[in-house]
Image (cartoon, rainbow, N blue to C red; front, side, top):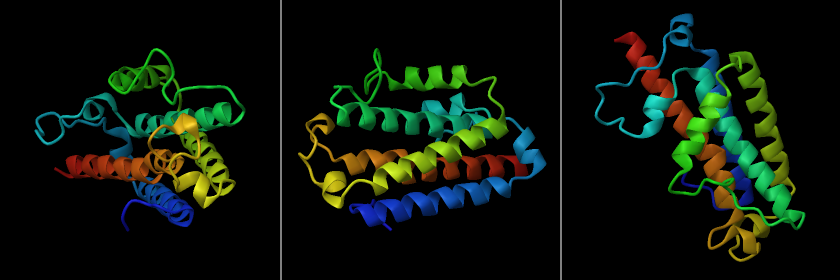
Length: 179
């Protein structure tokens, strides 16, 4: 399936990829859970996140924190409080530093807590999306605060696409553990 462009596709892709992620996590061996991520010496893995995340908890917390950005952004703006998606002082050129902040903030969060937090934030994002119409999600110009994009594109990026990113990362970790 391509990138969702309707409410139904968004909900289906988000829930399908979330379930795939959870199924993959439940299949992880003790060795995979205990071995720190290490993607050094893999030239194709040059983005900052390959070095940032050291374990499953870090990945889950990253997903959770981006859900929280989405949820708070939509809530604030629909209640009349103008708020940008990324919190100050971050912007789309400096969001890597924000991701580092999230990583540091959760170094004492347990894996079990991270799983629960992600489950709750996924459910909240799905509930929010379900309460919006197809037009509200995928028509441009419905909400001034979304800019030139659609609200649905933010939901896709923070759910199904982000879950696919996490699955890809965990599969790469699994491959490293076998080598």
